[in-house]
Length: 210
Image (cartoon, rainbow, N blue to C red):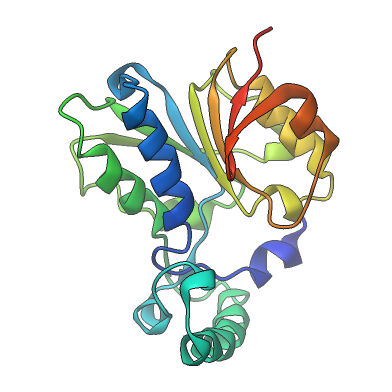
């Protein structure tokens, strides 16, 4: 991954809540037994912990003008502090995913988390749920995932890679036929998406049958 691109992206609470809501609504509406599925989130973002309470909450498209201004100012400060690697980080996405999963009576035994930065994995609170968190250090461009996953969650990662096609192929290869991927690539469009994936709805895809 392009190191500076990774640093320049600041996360905040409920940044990806719309994408997660779409994913778990689809799972519920289609009566998918989530307890039998292997789920991985690739590239959860980290934010300087002491600044995290001051960043606006909710997806950027829901922010009013004052919240967007607050975000822009704090983002610059957070970026400069984070690139020193001297501050503890916080990650929101894992807890938000677990909050959705907890709604089901039958839950998966574990949630896999992959990232190319150890400091991001260290920022994950692994003791707040009965569901085991299994982090593993991996660069998506040199993926070799430990196993296939039924559901992959990947937000704002592919468009920041040196080779986005390689990253997307890694995701596709890790899915079984008809596996689900919740994928946000920003404004990036790749032909591979149409070749290998069927769009369910906004940022939600299913791998085509082999």
